[in-house]
Image (cartoon, rainbow, N blue to C red):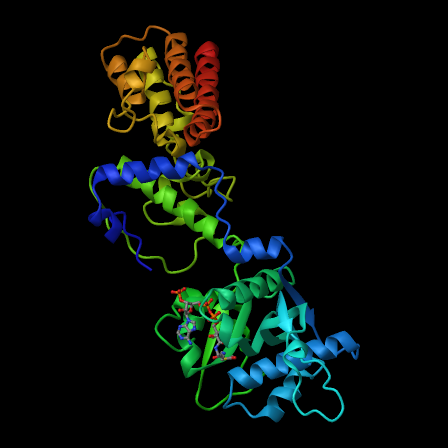
Length: 431
Ligand code: ACO
């Protein structure tokens, strides 16, 4: 996957379109993109059940429906084989049921072959199996034997939701990988769910290190099928498979922030694996919290080797004591600029983003203004710098409100800056 700050959409639209789009996105925090399927799930119209052959009547009825669904949707699969696996006690079916009206054929009166029109109209509301996936657990991975969605409901997102429900449920049971033999016709669907052929080029070296099933080898466990494609998919603990849409919006928003704060588009190397945290995405490193990239790694060796003279380790910049007010102010401004939450405060507010800003805010302040004030030696005490920071944060809250994405960034940055100022004051006092 290529991460490109100048995606095709960026090329297609002007800066202003993007700024407006960003405004719209941030204005709707907290993100909550509810799909129709999610609405149906909350309303109880759509539900999921794990069913296995435990001998209970309801389970057997559900499994018969699964068998019929698989039989209809996988016509080339021998019916006996479907029955054997679906009713095998080591297999489990995740069944997707939809509450809907069903025409129930009434019992025909004796002597008449066809039911009367009134009798045909008998309608009942009941839970109907609209999708199912039959799988078996093998230690840390699961093999999907069959998967199908009823023909009336296909290509409406049911297959994706069913797969995500399965991943989310298995994730909580320590399952790290899914394996399947996909029919040629279904390879495209599985690819869109994150499956790939382990022998194909997508299986990078780093992937093979991560995939337990590849590391431990599943070939001894599951059967090989002719005419089907072996595909695997990793289940990531850090991904919430039931709110993928929202996670996408959060990532998009982060990319926009990068786009808006960079004047020159940069094409980064693509991702080799799913990042655990947003700042692991190439180009988004600056979103890392300060501790992540500022703390120098600690050496395990506590004493120097006797034969070599003790190495003079360079003192990390954040531990050096600045000697003048100008150096201290410069230090705290650099601390602020390197913080991932400083993006709204780096430059004066752009009027094209906020046309009325300078009518509302009479005393604007930002980091670049503070930097140039410092270069002109305007600051005489750290208190003066502190009050400029306060002014900058108060302006932000006053203009954007307490709930805005900017207010959140201001809170994070304020804590980091005030901590650094306190520390500088303490160090200066001890000199
Ligand atoms: N080939 C390529 N792409 C597909 C296919 C397919 N057969 N089916 C769906 N897709 C795409 C959709 O267009 C959609 O793309 P988009 O996200 O870009 O819009 C995406 O995959 C997800 O589609 P959904 O609507 O979520 O999937 P759907 O509800 O249609 O379910 C399924 C997919 C289960 C494959 C269904 O089409 C089906 O039951 N097919 C017949 C049975 C079958 O082939 N089962 C798999 C056999 S392999 C096995 O069981 C191990």
